[in-house]
Length: 257
Ligand SMILES: Nc1ncnc2c1ncn2[C@@H]1O[C@H](COP(=O)(O)OP(=O)(O)OP(=O)(O)O)[C@@H](O)[C@H]1O
Image 1: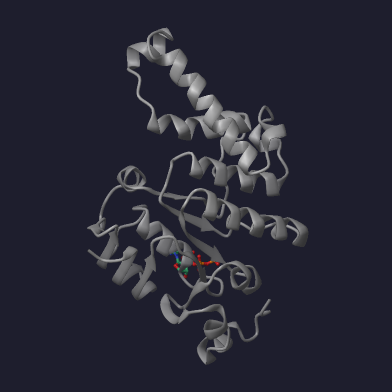
Image 2: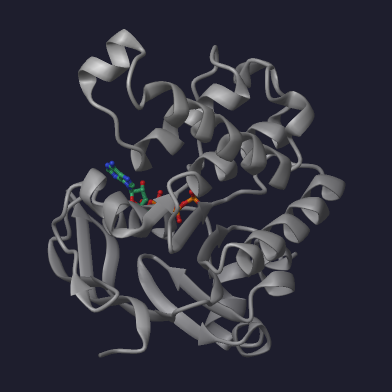
């Protein structure tokens, strides 16, 4: 069996005339903390959408833990052990932070429809368990004191942390983070770096993080993949990628942070 947890093999995706993902091939080893970088419109989010079944690949294969997951529906991909956060937050803004996490936690617990509507049987004990688990996750991401606040009223940086807690509630083996630092100030970015490193270790996760800013990725990811115009242009250590002529060219005219 392959030692890779995730493998993309010659994956292609077109949107009309736009070749958004061009013959993409890369692999992640189990337990890696890897970064996917590239300029605006390079195809990073589309790759996440292909992995998570939001879009179908036009050709190529995606393998997770040795199993071909190409063409699976999003809920099936989640059940296999892949969770993600979104560039544009997808929280339930009127629900509390706790409720947002509990909703995701419920995926892993069983009680019947009848038990749910009557609040009898396994329902009470399970709900208690889900609440405890969710509170622990909120604590992990530094939001314990915000548990009962409506998600939509949390500061932006906190909402991003809440999205991470919600993704962790799905108990993934592979976590995909789509620009988790977007909209954060430098201090928040530093705190986020520590959080990503911490959850990577604590939850024994493989993490792939999309980042437009090189600095964040270079600081926390020992493995970096750089793409431009849908195609991979570099794949290696931060130093290898940072000094790669095509990467420098891709970022030329953009601020290399
Ligand atoms: N649903 C869609 N329909 C049409 N074109 C799309 C769609 N999604 C993405 N694209 C196009 O595919 C290309 C890659 O977009 P994508 O969002 O994956 O890039 P990105 O690297 O994530 O960019 P950013 O850093 O700005 O988020 C772009 O040209 C984009 O306009």
